[in-house]
Length: 94
Image (tube, rainbow, N blue to C red; front, side):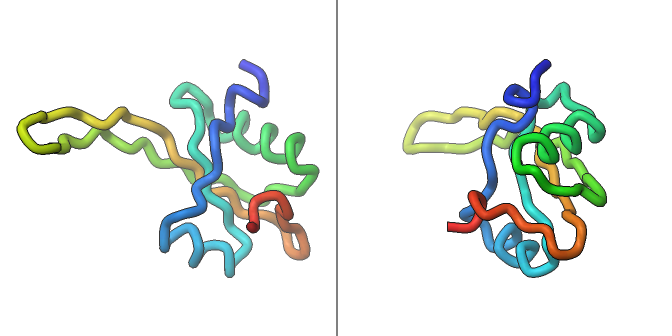
C-alpha cells in the first residue's frame, strides 16, 4: 500500500474537525486496512510535517432512509493526526 492509498481525503466540513484545528490536530479519512504507523508516515511524507501522535476510529456503517429506500452508508476509518508545535498543513486550511 503506497502513501497515496493510505490517505483518502481530509475532513473539513465538520464542527469537530474545525475545533481540532485550534489544537493543531487534523482529521483524515483513511484506508480501513492502514495502521497508525502507515498513517503517520503518509502524512509526514505528503505534507512535509512532523507528526506527534495518531488516533484512529473505525466508523461503523449506519442505516439511512431516503423516502421509501433504506440503505447503509459504508464503513470507514477516521484518523486524528496531531502535529508538532509550529507545524501546520497549509493545503488543509482553505
